Length: 313
Ligand SMILES: [Zn+2]
Image (cartoon, rainbow, N blue to C red; front, side, top):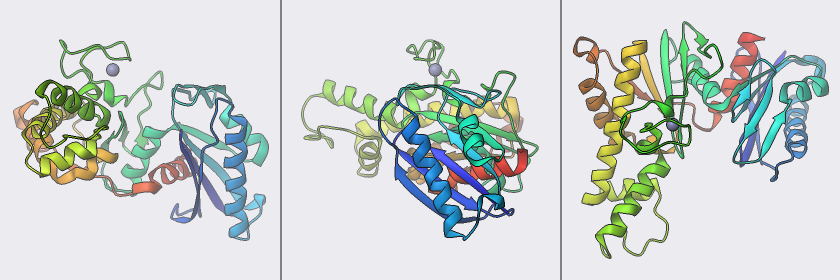
């Protein structure tokens, strides 16, 4: 029997197929059809699941279930999208759409939680009891896996780790809070801060002549010894470490796993985040903190979706 995992993102859809051992046997990717109408997105994703089954020479009767990873916020009880701001999707009954089309059980989970489950069960956190996963890319997301289970919380909001306050006097956040770690340490925040300081400093410097500055440009600046980039990077990693220290205090996990584009600069991340986390937590527990880079790369979403479907349906 087979399991399908579909990772529906704002720009890309990926679908994978696996047998009961959840080892991925095949993956297909497509661009996400643009626009606020979810119907073409569903049709594309459904066709991809059909293609994967056909490529295995399998029929629908051999499909045990489908897992779906999707940006949120979601209504997990209803199996639906509440709203995805970047695409305009609203009130989409994703689970029902797939159940009606394929006639199998369907599990829907938000993308950060699915990635957390994948890394905890089959990636960097395999064998660990409690894993905290943080994805540091355009924003910061996360998920918590404890005792082999995803911690969803009473209202489905557990693991919104980008919105841990690391500076109560910091700037307001779109979430309604203030000084959230995402405002300092996400890729877009790192790039924005460097742009602001570079504009103040006037012409010249490492980033002179660049129209757009990305977090990757800042990483290159750090490697080239640029003071401005290094200052912003260090401040961002310190704030990220404060959040890790808080989470360590609350959860005492075996491992923190970092995914997302910014963590590709792992050699510039691990040391300063760990030092800051150890500085801002209970001293007697500081030496327990362990950080690791995510292992599943581009397959993290579909792997998580398959594992969640297999384990929880
Ligand atoms: Zn926030």
